Image (cartoon, rainbow, N blue to C red; front, side, top):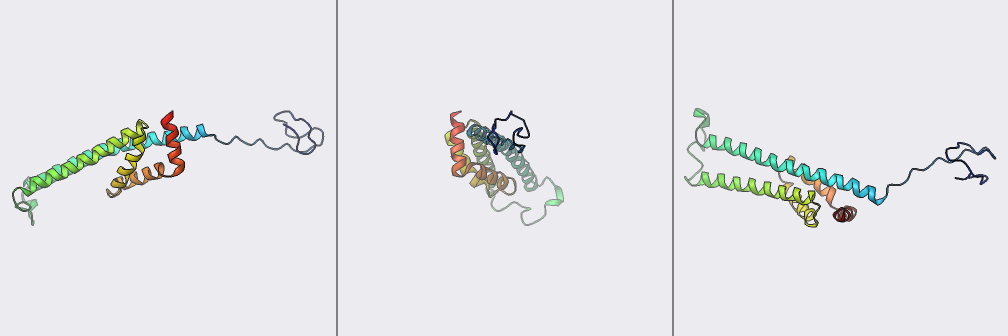
Length: 172
């Protein structure tokens, strides 16, 4: 390190030049290099994959609870509390079970998509990023949790810089 006024050699940590009395320039902290950015991005990807796993479990639990409650309502397990337009069942006899099966299949498909997206991100697979982006777009309509995780996923995974960082963590 040298004095910016007279060029005299300074000892590291010396606050003032002994020759001209000029204060030494403060040490500039190093700029984070690519490895630091890749490690930081890898931590974000791991956190995102864990949240996708949690979302998948939450989807199964809330779906199961909602279907159990709906089944109890339509099966007249609440006594006189189920009077209404569907108190005798919603339409033909086959309609209720078909509706429940359709909802159950949609819950399982949503959960499977979330688990596969989480696994792909956790394993840092090349297909995991693209698959997670597609699942994030599909989950945007599931307000509020699906919307939140969908937006977070898109922010973390989209963009040229993020795609380059993801390619770097694939190689690690």
